[in-house]
Structures are given as structure tokens and as C-alpha cells.
Length: 158
Image 1 (cartoon, one colour):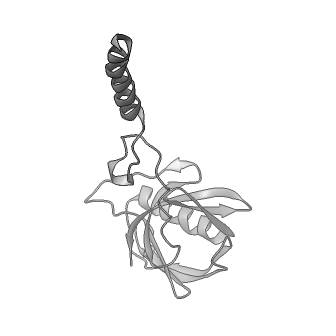
Image 2 (cartoon, rainbow, N blue to C red):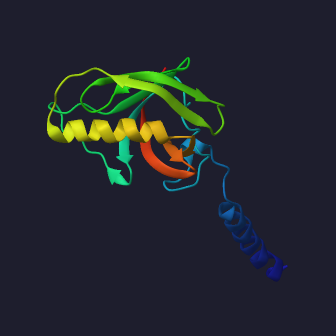
């Protein structure tokens, strides 16, 4: 009996330790920092206000208030936004999966700083060459023959 009396507290300690060692089930909200969570779906191609971050491999940085963000909005077959200096507009077609093409792009005719005019010229030329798109996390990549030529981030979703 003396041995049994010594084993009971030992068994209790083992049971308590084993119970504490189990990993509790956590909700995503209670997950530890850095824990993997399901990826957030990318914003939709249409109805989202996109801000240009990179064009032809070069980062696009705008300094407010002198320089406005370069933006793009696609809705109902119409493309619109700010092209660095002027407002732009035109048409687009897409299969909603991977193809995207712009047509009849035009803009207002204001004179701006030379660097803004060059950005606008390069942007409109590049958009005219786009024939596809894909998402990279929360960003929209515009493609020419499968190669990214412009990278946008979502500003607002309608």
C-alpha cells in the first residue's frame, strides 16, 4: 500500500502535465503573431481604384500635393484615372480571368512638369501594349506577353 500511495501523486502530476501539453484549438483572431492565416482574396479587377506603384520595372513615387497619384479604374468597359498629369479615359476588354487590353486611350491636354509628362507618355504607351493581367497577393500586375509591365495596388473598392 505504501508504494501505491506514492504512485497516486506521481500519476496525477503526469496527467496534469499531459493535459497542459496539448495545443489548444485557436481561432484566426487568437492565432499567434506570424502564424499562417488564409490569404486575403485580391480585390476585383473592375470597380477597384488602382494606384500605380511600378512601371516598366521602375518604382513610381509621387510627392503630394504637387504630384497626384497615378490611378486606374476599370468599370463597364471604360478605363479612367489620372495618368500623372492629366485625366485619362478609354476602353478596355477582359475575359475576367487573365486577358486585358486597352483601346482608344486619350487624356486631357494640360501642360505639366517635364517628368510628369514623360511618365504620362510612358504609361499610355505601356497600357496600349498590355494584353493580360494577374494578381500577386493584393497587387494587380499588368502584363505584356506574360511579362509584368505595370504594378498597381488597390486604393478603394466599390
